[in-house]
Length: 263
Image 1 (cartoon, helix red, strand yellow):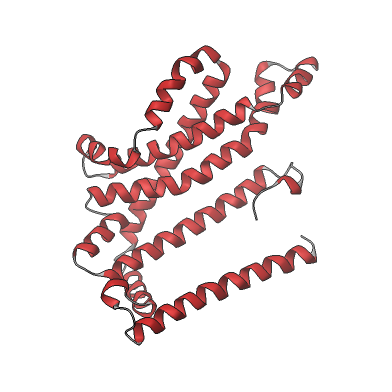
Image 2: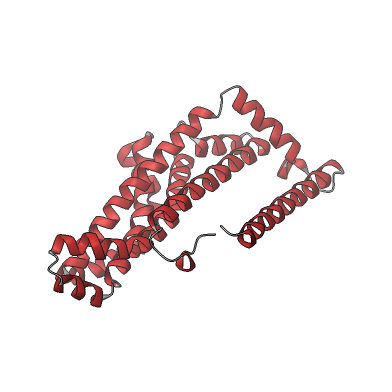
Protein backbone atom coordinates (compact mmCIF):
# COMPACT_ATOMS: atom_id res chain seq x y z
CA UNK A 1 0.00 0.00 0.00
CA UNK A 2 1.53 3.30 -1.10
CA UNK A 3 1.33 6.58 0.83
CA UNK A 4 -1.38 8.02 -1.42
CA UNK A 5 -3.61 4.97 -0.99
CA UNK A 6 -3.07 5.03 2.78
CA UNK A 7 -4.01 8.70 3.02
CA UNK A 8 -7.13 8.06 0.97
CA UNK A 9 -8.21 5.23 3.27
CA UNK A 10 -7.62 7.37 6.36
CA UNK A 11 -9.60 10.24 4.83
CA UNK A 12 -12.52 7.95 4.03
CA UNK A 13 -12.47 6.50 7.56
CA UNK A 14 -12.41 9.97 9.12
CA UNK A 15 -15.30 11.15 6.94
CA UNK A 16 -17.34 8.09 7.90
CA UNK A 17 -16.72 8.70 11.60
CA UNK A 18 -17.63 12.38 11.27
CA UNK A 19 -20.81 11.55 9.38
CA UNK A 20 -21.96 8.96 11.91
CA UNK A 21 -21.00 11.22 14.81
CA UNK A 22 -22.92 14.14 13.33
CA UNK A 23 -26.04 12.03 12.81
CA UNK A 24 -25.92 10.65 16.37
CA UNK A 25 -25.36 14.11 17.82
CA UNK A 26 -28.29 15.54 15.89
CA UNK A 27 -30.47 12.62 16.97
CA UNK A 28 -29.51 13.10 20.63
CA UNK A 29 -30.18 16.84 20.53
CA UNK A 30 -33.56 16.35 18.87
CA UNK A 31 -34.49 13.92 21.64
CA UNK A 32 -33.11 16.03 24.51
CA UNK A 33 -34.95 19.16 23.41
CA UNK A 34 -38.12 17.09 22.79
CA UNK A 35 -38.31 18.03 19.12
CA UNK A 36 -38.99 14.35 18.48
CA UNK A 37 -40.80 11.89 20.75
CA UNK A 38 -38.37 9.41 22.31
CA UNK A 39 -41.24 6.95 22.70
CA UNK A 40 -40.99 6.34 18.95
CA UNK A 41 -37.26 6.74 18.21
CA UNK A 42 -35.53 6.64 21.65
CA UNK A 43 -32.14 8.42 21.81
CA UNK A 44 -28.48 7.34 21.35
CA UNK A 45 -27.52 7.75 25.02
CA UNK A 46 -30.39 5.50 26.16
CA UNK A 47 -29.58 2.93 23.48
CA UNK A 48 -25.90 2.87 24.46
CA UNK A 49 -26.84 2.43 28.12
CA UNK A 50 -29.21 -0.40 27.23
CA UNK A 51 -26.52 -2.13 25.14
CA UNK A 52 -24.01 -1.95 27.99
CA UNK A 53 -26.57 -3.30 30.43
CA UNK A 54 -27.60 -6.13 28.08
CA UNK A 55 -24.01 -7.28 27.52
CA UNK A 56 -22.88 -6.94 31.14
CA UNK A 57 -25.86 -8.98 32.33
CA UNK A 58 -25.19 -11.46 29.49
CA UNK A 59 -28.81 -11.13 28.49
CA UNK A 60 -28.12 -10.69 24.79
CA UNK A 61 -25.22 -13.12 24.21
CA UNK A 62 -27.27 -16.36 24.09
CA UNK A 63 -29.69 -14.82 21.59
CA UNK A 64 -26.81 -13.45 19.52
CA UNK A 65 -25.15 -16.87 19.41
CA UNK A 66 -28.37 -18.56 18.25
CA UNK A 67 -28.89 -16.05 15.44
CA UNK A 68 -25.26 -16.40 14.31
CA UNK A 69 -25.59 -20.19 14.27
CA UNK A 70 -28.71 -20.01 12.13
CA UNK A 71 -27.28 -17.46 9.70
CA UNK A 72 -23.87 -19.12 9.30
CA UNK A 73 -25.37 -22.58 8.86
CA UNK A 74 -27.73 -21.22 6.22
CA UNK A 75 -24.87 -19.41 4.48
CA UNK A 76 -22.70 -22.53 4.44
CA UNK A 77 -25.40 -24.92 3.23
CA UNK A 78 -26.77 -22.44 0.70
CA UNK A 79 -23.29 -21.74 -0.69
CA UNK A 80 -22.30 -25.39 -1.00
CA UNK A 81 -25.56 -26.46 -2.64
CA UNK A 82 -25.64 -23.39 -4.89
CA UNK A 83 -22.09 -23.92 -6.17
CA UNK A 84 -22.64 -27.68 -6.55
CA UNK A 85 -25.80 -27.27 -8.64
CA UNK A 86 -24.23 -24.50 -10.71
CA UNK A 87 -21.26 -26.75 -11.44
CA UNK A 88 -23.54 -29.67 -12.39
CA UNK A 89 -25.65 -27.54 -14.74
CA UNK A 90 -22.53 -25.95 -16.19
CA UNK A 91 -21.24 -29.40 -17.12
CA UNK A 92 -24.56 -30.87 -18.28
CA UNK A 93 -26.26 -28.48 -20.69
CA UNK A 94 -29.26 -30.76 -21.22
CA UNK A 95 -29.94 -30.75 -17.49
CA UNK A 96 -29.54 -26.96 -17.48
CA UNK A 97 -32.20 -26.57 -20.18
CA UNK A 98 -34.56 -28.89 -18.29
CA UNK A 99 -34.16 -27.23 -14.89
CA UNK A 100 -33.80 -23.60 -16.00
CA UNK A 101 -37.55 -22.71 -16.05
CA UNK A 102 -38.13 -24.62 -12.82
CA UNK A 103 -35.34 -22.77 -11.00
CA UNK A 104 -36.55 -19.42 -12.35
CA UNK A 105 -40.09 -20.19 -11.16
CA UNK A 106 -38.87 -21.18 -7.70
CA UNK A 107 -36.74 -18.05 -7.52
CA UNK A 108 -39.84 -15.96 -8.15
CA UNK A 109 -41.49 -17.19 -4.96
CA UNK A 110 -41.16 -14.61 -2.14
CA UNK A 111 -38.74 -16.38 0.18
CA UNK A 112 -39.91 -14.64 3.35
CA UNK A 113 -43.45 -15.81 2.66
CA UNK A 114 -42.17 -19.37 3.12
CA UNK A 115 -41.21 -18.66 6.73
CA UNK A 116 -44.54 -19.74 8.27
CA UNK A 117 -44.47 -22.94 6.20
CA UNK A 118 -40.97 -23.85 7.39
CA UNK A 119 -41.95 -23.16 11.00
CA UNK A 120 -44.97 -25.43 10.55
CA UNK A 121 -42.74 -28.16 9.09
CA UNK A 122 -39.71 -27.87 11.39
CA UNK A 123 -41.08 -26.19 14.51
CA UNK A 124 -39.86 -23.19 16.49
CA UNK A 125 -36.30 -24.49 16.83
CA UNK A 126 -33.18 -23.60 14.89
CA UNK A 127 -33.98 -25.88 11.94
CA UNK A 128 -36.72 -23.71 10.44
CA UNK A 129 -34.50 -20.60 10.51
CA UNK A 130 -31.55 -22.45 8.99
CA UNK A 131 -33.79 -23.72 6.19
CA UNK A 132 -35.14 -20.23 5.45
CA UNK A 133 -31.62 -18.75 5.48
CA UNK A 134 -30.42 -21.56 3.20
CA UNK A 135 -33.14 -20.92 0.64
CA UNK A 136 -32.39 -17.20 0.57
CA UNK A 137 -28.66 -17.78 0.11
CA UNK A 138 -28.92 -20.64 -2.38
CA UNK A 139 -30.35 -18.71 -5.31
CA UNK A 140 -27.97 -15.77 -4.92
CA UNK A 141 -24.93 -18.05 -4.92
CA UNK A 142 -26.30 -20.36 -7.61
CA UNK A 143 -26.96 -17.64 -10.19
CA UNK A 144 -23.58 -16.01 -9.60
CA UNK A 145 -21.68 -19.30 -9.69
CA UNK A 146 -23.53 -20.48 -12.80
CA UNK A 147 -22.71 -17.21 -14.58
CA UNK A 148 -19.09 -17.61 -13.51
CA UNK A 149 -18.83 -21.14 -14.91
CA UNK A 150 -20.49 -20.05 -18.14
CA UNK A 151 -18.21 -17.02 -18.58
CA UNK A 152 -14.89 -18.84 -18.37
CA UNK A 153 -12.77 -17.89 -21.39
CA UNK A 154 -12.96 -20.92 -23.76
CA UNK A 155 -9.55 -20.06 -25.23
CA UNK A 156 -7.99 -20.66 -21.82
CA UNK A 157 -9.65 -24.06 -21.59
CA UNK A 158 -8.49 -24.97 -25.10
CA UNK A 159 -4.95 -23.82 -24.34
CA UNK A 160 -4.76 -25.91 -21.18
CA UNK A 161 -6.18 -28.94 -22.97
CA UNK A 162 -3.55 -28.57 -25.71
CA UNK A 163 -0.94 -28.85 -22.98
CA UNK A 164 -2.38 -32.22 -22.06
CA UNK A 165 -4.45 -31.27 -19.02
CA UNK A 166 -7.13 -33.69 -17.87
CA UNK A 167 -10.74 -32.67 -17.17
CA UNK A 168 -10.07 -32.48 -13.43
CA UNK A 169 -6.99 -30.32 -14.04
CA UNK A 170 -9.00 -27.99 -16.29
CA UNK A 171 -11.55 -27.59 -13.53
CA UNK A 172 -8.95 -26.99 -10.81
CA UNK A 173 -6.60 -24.76 -12.80
CA UNK A 174 -8.98 -22.78 -15.02
CA UNK A 175 -12.71 -23.10 -14.35
CA UNK A 176 -12.82 -22.75 -10.57
CA UNK A 177 -10.17 -19.98 -10.30
CA UNK A 178 -11.96 -18.01 -13.02
CA UNK A 179 -15.29 -18.45 -11.23
CA UNK A 180 -14.07 -17.46 -7.76
CA UNK A 181 -14.90 -13.73 -8.17
CA UNK A 182 -18.45 -14.63 -9.24
CA UNK A 183 -18.89 -17.06 -6.35
CA UNK A 184 -17.56 -14.54 -3.84
CA UNK A 185 -19.98 -11.95 -5.19
CA UNK A 186 -22.81 -14.40 -4.54
CA UNK A 187 -21.55 -15.11 -1.02
CA UNK A 188 -21.34 -11.37 -0.31
CA UNK A 189 -24.98 -10.96 -1.25
CA UNK A 190 -25.86 -14.18 0.56
CA UNK A 191 -24.30 -12.97 3.80
CA UNK A 192 -26.97 -10.34 4.32
CA UNK A 193 -29.66 -12.68 3.03
CA UNK A 194 -28.66 -15.37 5.55
CA UNK A 195 -28.87 -12.93 8.44
CA UNK A 196 -32.19 -11.60 7.16
CA UNK A 197 -33.60 -15.12 6.82
CA UNK A 198 -32.60 -16.00 10.38
CA UNK A 199 -34.04 -12.77 11.82
CA UNK A 200 -37.32 -13.01 9.91
CA UNK A 201 -37.70 -16.66 10.88
CA UNK A 202 -37.20 -15.75 14.54
CA UNK A 203 -39.60 -12.84 14.19
CA UNK A 204 -42.31 -15.11 12.76
CA UNK A 205 -41.97 -17.84 15.35
CA UNK A 206 -39.21 -18.59 17.86
CA UNK A 207 -38.38 -18.64 21.54
CA UNK A 208 -34.85 -17.22 21.25
CA UNK A 209 -32.62 -15.17 18.95
CA UNK A 210 -32.19 -11.49 18.11
CA UNK A 211 -35.27 -11.56 15.88
CA UNK A 212 -37.29 -12.88 18.81
CA UNK A 213 -35.84 -10.13 21.03
CA UNK A 214 -36.87 -7.47 18.50
CA UNK A 215 -40.39 -8.91 18.24
CA UNK A 216 -40.75 -9.17 22.02
CA UNK A 217 -39.40 -5.67 22.65
CA UNK A 218 -41.70 -4.26 19.99
CA UNK A 219 -44.66 -5.92 21.65
CA UNK A 220 -43.65 -4.31 24.94
CA UNK A 221 -43.20 -0.91 23.24
CA UNK A 222 -39.54 -0.94 24.27
CA UNK A 223 -38.15 0.97 21.29
CA UNK A 224 -34.78 1.37 23.00
CA UNK A 225 -34.25 -2.39 23.10
CA UNK A 226 -35.40 -2.68 19.48
CA UNK A 227 -32.74 -0.18 18.39
CA UNK A 228 -30.15 -1.94 20.57
CA UNK A 229 -30.77 -5.22 18.74
CA UNK A 230 -30.68 -3.46 15.37
CA UNK A 231 -27.30 -1.93 16.20
CA UNK A 232 -25.96 -5.34 17.22
CA UNK A 233 -27.11 -6.71 13.87
CA UNK A 234 -25.43 -3.83 12.03
CA UNK A 235 -22.15 -4.49 13.85
CA UNK A 236 -22.39 -8.21 13.07
CA UNK A 237 -23.01 -7.51 9.40
CA UNK A 238 -20.14 -5.03 9.17
CA UNK A 239 -17.77 -7.45 10.92
CA UNK A 240 -18.70 -10.42 8.76
CA UNK A 241 -18.48 -8.34 5.60
CA UNK A 242 -15.01 -7.12 6.59
CA UNK A 243 -13.93 -10.71 7.18
CA UNK A 244 -15.28 -11.69 3.78
CA UNK A 245 -13.35 -8.87 2.12
CA UNK A 246 -10.15 -10.11 3.74
CA UNK A 247 -10.91 -13.61 2.43
CA UNK A 248 -11.62 -12.16 -1.02
CA UNK A 249 -8.28 -10.36 -1.12
CA UNK A 250 -6.51 -13.55 -0.07
CA UNK A 251 -8.25 -15.72 -2.66
CA UNK A 252 -7.82 -13.15 -5.45
CA UNK A 253 -4.24 -12.20 -4.65
CA UNK A 254 -3.16 -13.66 -8.01
CA UNK A 255 -5.18 -11.00 -9.84
CA UNK A 256 -3.83 -7.54 -10.67
CA UNK A 257 -4.84 -5.09 -7.94
CA UNK A 258 -6.69 -2.90 -10.46
CA UNK A 259 -9.14 -5.74 -11.06
CA UNK A 260 -10.07 -6.12 -7.42
CA UNK A 261 -13.30 -4.40 -6.60
CA UNK A 262 -13.08 -4.34 -2.84
CA UNK A 263 -12.19 -1.07 -1.10
